[in-house]
Length: 98
Image (tube, rainbow, N blue to C red; front, side, top):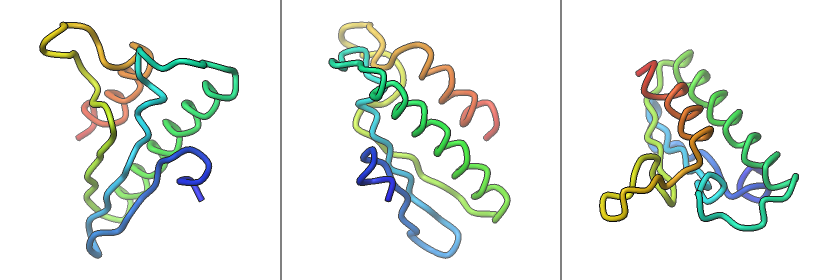
């Protein structure tokens, strides 16, 4: 359902491990066509990630997160891959807790 809506989804790899696939094109500094719907979809995906991480934590599951573009800085151009607000939200959901 989430794949058809926004290109992100969860796959169970084992009983205790899930793979979360993000459509990180939403967060790219180079994304064009930032319509109101585009921005809503980007926020919706970030909320979904938070819920999936909380659910995994409650169930004692591990997760692997993958996407098109990583958060962080391009090592060649020294420019960020993601818009700062999305990088900050992602870090709060992941690095600050795990």
